[in-house]
Length: 248
Image (cartoon, rainbow, N blue to C red):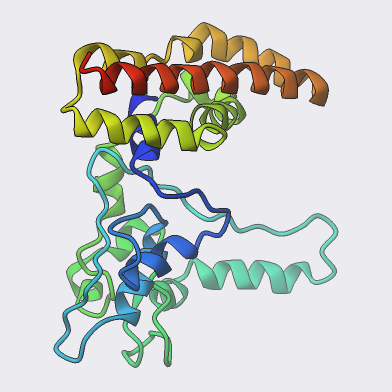
């Protein structure tokens, strides 16, 4: 939560448009941003110079990146189950996997535009295929091993984490950024920094209680709790600002 808090404090805004972040970075309107890998790679390509260099680069932080796969399946009652099954078989075949990440114009690759999506089959990542891949350096299986996730700890808290980020960062962003800028200008005084980073309201037990509250789907109670937490964080950031301003 401290890492999320610091990332938020360094951010200009939040958006519900996934492509806006790599677009602004590629245009030079933002120094850095978070996005899904193929968005980053695609925009890196879009601003690539004739000499092959680009003013934008995408990085997959080792140990800080979760890896997931896009699902594929057939809806129950599909009118053409044989066609649906054939399509799924093709997607997972060697030919289908090549379309995801081969360079345009190469044998088996897309005709014009690279898809920049990582194949899911482990056996696809071999020396022969890597020669034709747009992301030949990618190794999702190895990258994923560096990121440890314990679903029994937090899988049931997915909605809670989203809720907590909203009250700690989104709803209070103005006060948070103002406090952070003052902390930077005063070289992070210890007391002010400790106040800013206080996340005791978001401890594991409180998260469990919030999960129980959200399960009730009582929007009035959810809103009241959000207001309570948002006010607490606003006051916390304002206090951090004043302490930092005074050098504490």
